[in-house]
Length: 230
Image 1 (cartoon, rainbow, N blue to C red):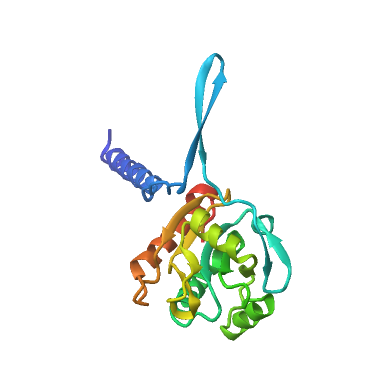
Image 2: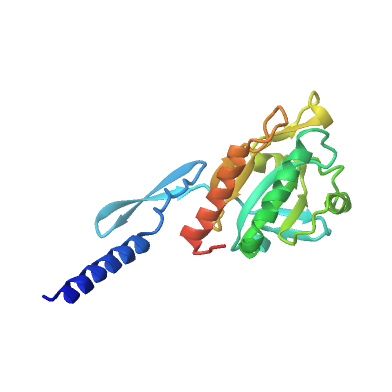
């Protein structure tokens, strides 16, 4: 082989190596778990017992949104949800939570067609649709993929605790008469809870690590399970 031929062979080898390195890309992160209760379904198939794993999912619900329109799960289908529980007159943790919600909504603008923000009121007697609409306006929230929901109080609290895996309930000793977690819940397009993130601490400080974890998990979920990139 001539010197030129050897040189060209080395260049080709280098190019192949670069191509292989680029094709590998970043390592795929571990798949997010599906949280909540798990049931096992046993059935017979071709004479053998097969076990299917049934993961918990968010049950059907019906609420009024801030525009006094009745909405249900179906209105938010084919989207990944980010969920919080709050109340409009909350004097402590809620304003901080909604500031983080607003920030995350802004940072996910490029994938807004695939993400739905849901704010469930845990004090529906006060938080009527018109109150929530004013709350949204007063806080400069104009995002179309962010809905404020109000409905049956007991059902809302149960939904938060049992299904969205975040605490929400009455507490006469708490500021405003209600107590709730400062966490956000990430739900996939099939209604499975994929993560709970304590973004706001009890001492009213922001847990930046949890906020960043939520944002990373959200984008990874969209990218690796739904083929959606920024």
